[in-house]
Length: 78
Image 1 (cartoon, rainbow, N blue to C red):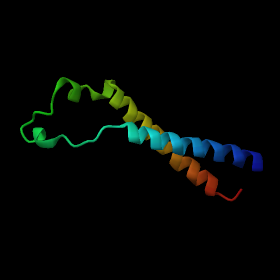
Image 2 (image 1 turned 45 degrees about the horizontal axis):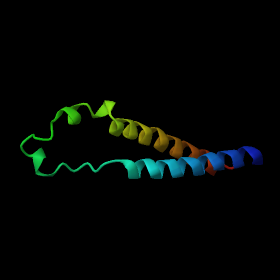
Image 3 (image 1 turned 180 degrees about the vertical axis):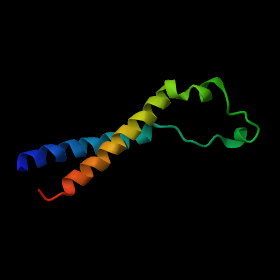
């Protein structure tokens, strides 16, 4: 069981580093005064899910779920 724990710990550390990097790569969510008049609804704002920003958001969700699951599994006493 200790080999499994070591492997899970290594995956956990890689997940933590990747999650930190992907969060730092994302853009800020503030749009400034353009959100008041609706000026933030541009072509890129509507199609953000298909862009690099959308991929970063999806990756963040995936890595965060992995982080939580691995943290729970590693805290079990097996």
